[in-house]
Length: 222
Ligand SMILES: Cc1cc2nc3c(=O)[nH]c(=O)nc-3n(C[C@H](O)[C@H](O)[C@H](O)COP(=O)(O)O)c2cc1C
Image (cartoon, rainbow, N blue to C red; front, top):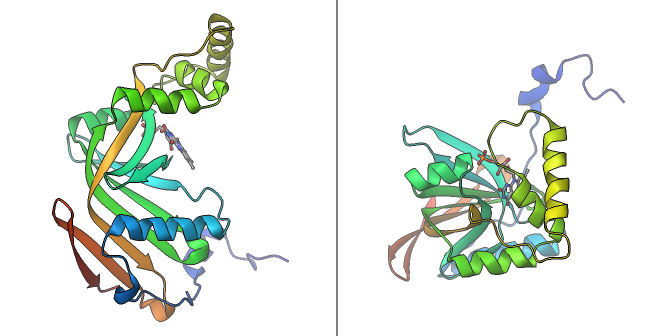
């Protein structure tokens, strides 16, 4: 079947339009603490066997105020916030060093759900990054050493060659964490839960941090 029906994909992009038929969000059934609510939704995304349920978009901002975004994997969350790992001197790492604020966004499309989280950023303690690095497969550990993330690379062959050299260098030994690779903690100040509904009348419940462990909860227009 020709799904384009004689049109180009550019002409059709505005036509993708599904109704989101779901049960919606009832404030009285949502947790008082948004991290507890996130845990419930994340668990539901895992139970629904979504691919990469911990994939999230991370937005950072340059010192000039220009935003940039990329996908990342969430590697942990608890009452303090949300954790991810990367290269500290990558583009995002440099932006976070200059402006330690970020936004992460999850999309669980099969459930018609999204979560938006905003807050401040700080590197995780070195001991926690070490522990996570040691839990990674050896090939990923070598990959972290091999990549000068976000910098220009002359060819794929150069990267593969560097990887092979590192394999030799560390043969038979444990691989230490590069000092330029590690984790960040995003401490949330705002967390929004979005549930798609019919007629684009979606439910949006936003939690805003008012004090250390106190959150204000509001419903927003879709
Ligand atoms: C689904 C998905 C998950 C990713 N997870 C990570 C991650 O956890 N850490 C990371 O450094 N890059 C991850 N990447 C690669 C980033 O999107 C990005 O290419 C890289 O971090 C460089 O970004 P930057 O140049 O803006 O710093 C992931 C990409 C995708 C598509």
